[in-house]
Length: 320
Image (cartoon, rainbow, N blue to C red; front, side, top):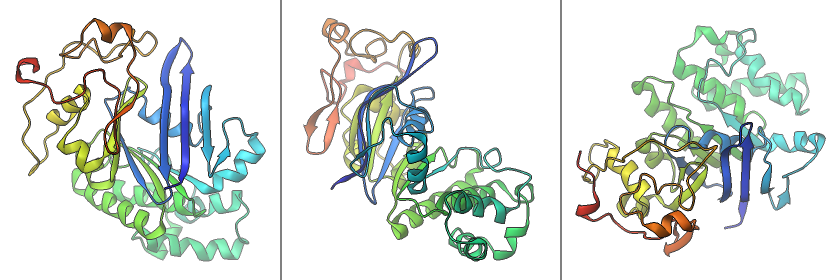
């Protein structure tokens, strides 16, 4: 499939030399959902924002519909943003409390010059219905809704310009468990119905498994494994991926021996030489400190950045 969004050696370094995103290669096709997982602080949210240039990249290349947008001027980028949407983690913090729901949803259409005032006003109830809310909700304010309803409003706003690419950055982590499944099902239904390309960022492996047919695993600013969902969950090849999956508690999923990683996550301002995971990896050897592994295909559609991919042996597993 032709990539709608593609990153090549994409990087972002913040003040103090913090390399939040470092040399990421990624592609998302039209209508595809890619899950992005990893520990807190690994760079997931930064990468998500760089892909739609809410944060400017400072290395590599970024293309959208085969057009290089890495250094696209602000005016041209603003026109392109109509095709991009984002749903943030905190539905309350992302909604202006001084605006009604109708104003919040209509605002992106006004910014991008979509329709006249009457057309935008008519479109608001349609978008509310799309996310399971009622037309009369348009006159209310964000504080009058539950967390799940606020996230539905945020989704409606993100869809107002009919984007081709939607970033969902931890869209359910601020919600009650009872509401999370409703929002996930809504997102999946909308993605399939509207043919959206979607980047679904989460630390919740169960949510990613539900949402994304393909999954990328991130560690310390880099992608360390990428594969089809079923392949990744059944046969992870990177030791870090195996540790993540072993820590997940999913009813009905395959039982795994718990892998307890030693040490702390290194600072992204001063990552280890060679393989960034080597300071916590149970099978690291001298080569891992000297040579940085590159993403390489180990099975059809499965890429791993590891010198020694494969399931950890019993003697390599840390005791709980």
